[in-house]
Figure (cartoon, rainbow, N blue to C red):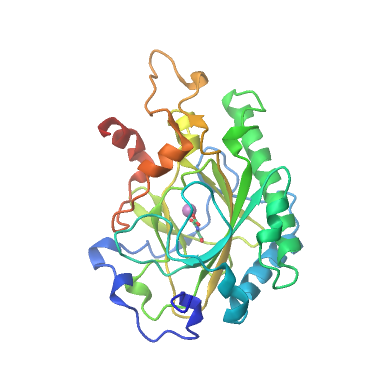
Length: 326
Ligand code: OGA
Ligand code: NI
């Protein structure tokens, strides 16, 4: 675990595996923009007045930051470099979970996995800081409820029955990732996370007041200006496939900075591995043939597990085309 980024109190240099050539690091446009606020026609939005109290949000952030400040001995037991391909497990790791061919991303992560409806896997979570389990379990339940509520609203808007997302499509567990991006001595050549579309159904992100998240928009990276009481909502690839492209999963990335650590918290709603997802009949007609393949979520993740030098700015629209080729 010494090679986790946050184990070094202050970095003075960046190893070459973190360094990207400039042509792969197109800078964001200079001004930070607020994402559209709960405009459900966009696909990466911020949601406010969502009913989750500011206290719950700040507690979650604080406990995440506190975890990464614990002495190494309190964290080492959770450190694991390898991911179980068959099921998500609670663990502490560095870098992205995509296959990157050796290139590295400036990010440490505590992944907390919780089974549903019986939440017995909470006992596998760290018990330090002492309120971590309580705060995270509460946050996880509230953000999952909010995500399900947003999905029901989407159903209403798109003419699907409201309970469409109950069941395997929203899985039998929830993942909460506490992402920690330590200050980086050379932000201009590194990334915290590669450009990617979330592969799940829907993601709620508590983005931290320290900027870093960037979203692909009309061929440019735009910096997201965090709103204190808002969650960023990302539609995952499964929503894009299910709606036959009516909703799009938006590509995003995380940049680093040299001044301040950034801690974000992400709740992922994902299908079970066996769940088959393809364009729903409600989105198909003679003029609208299925544009996407029907795959189990496990197979989808296996196929879309590689990020190439993180350069892409077009994953938002090319899933359709990529699927024609494979
Ligand atoms: C992710 C992600 C953004 C962030 O974990 O998939 O996009 O701001 N995180 O940490
Ligand atoms: Ni993401």
